[in-house]
Each structure stands twice: as C-alpha cells, then as structure tokens.
Amino acid sequence: MRKINRTHVVGHSADAMFDLVADVEKYPEFLPLCEDLSILSRATEGNKEIITANMAVGYKTIHEVFLSRVTLERDQHRILVEYLDGPISHLENLWVFEDIVDGSSRVHFSLEYEFKNLALRLLMGAMFDKAFRKFSAAFEKRADQVYGLRQSGR
Image (cartoon, rainbow, N blue to C red; front, top):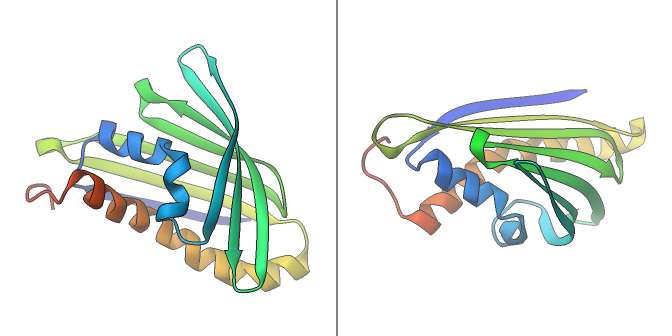
C-alpha cells in the first residue's frame, strides 16, 4: 500500500482551508488530473456532512472515474475521503486543519491507496504518486488565489 503524509503551514485559517477543501465541486478548476466532479448525494449525520461524489481523472490516454464518500467534520476541522468504487482497491485521504498564530494554520494531509492489480499499479503508480504529491500544493495555491496572499505566517 502506498502512503503519503504531508504537514505544512499555510497563511490562511483552519476555517478557510476547511472551506476550500470541502468545496469539492471546484476541484476540476485547479486539482491536477481532475477532469470532472459530480455530486451524487449530500446528507447530514449528527455534526457530519456526508457527500457522495464521482471524480473523473485523466492523464494522457488513461481516464477513470472514482466514486468516493467525503465526510466533512467542520467542528473538528477534519475531512475524510473514502474510496467506494473504481480502479483502486483502497483509497483513504484525510485532511486535518489546525489554527496556529497570526491567522495561519497547519495542514495535515495523508493519503493511502492501492491499485486492484499489478498491471494497473505498474502503469499508473508512478503517475499517481507524482500527482498526489502535488495535491496539497495545489490546494495552497488555490487558497492564495481565493483568499489572497498573506504576508504574515509565511
């Protein structure tokens, strides 16, 4: 199983970063490989909002659709993405946002995934590793575009 863990400080609050990552409909505008995203359902369970969505990804001649459940826990500044169906046997992505000094926040990004078969892993593995490693940077860049660059906390 492949694992990626990233933690870094961004010049935006935990609330702002949570809102940015929770706005899944905007992903095709800035996220590497994301060609389309469609919301299939939204539900509330206690203090959690649950979104079921299809995300179409593509790279050159490879195009796949991933069905995922996104659990938004605003009060915890936590977003969990769980894979439901597609070309991967396991995918789990966790975002945790933590306020720190001067309006900045610490962003914790973790990802675990495994392809269903060896051929697909060999064909797509290196490309996925490269793209997933750019995800957190893509969100930070998007935050700067949406909320503006901050001088402090950088």
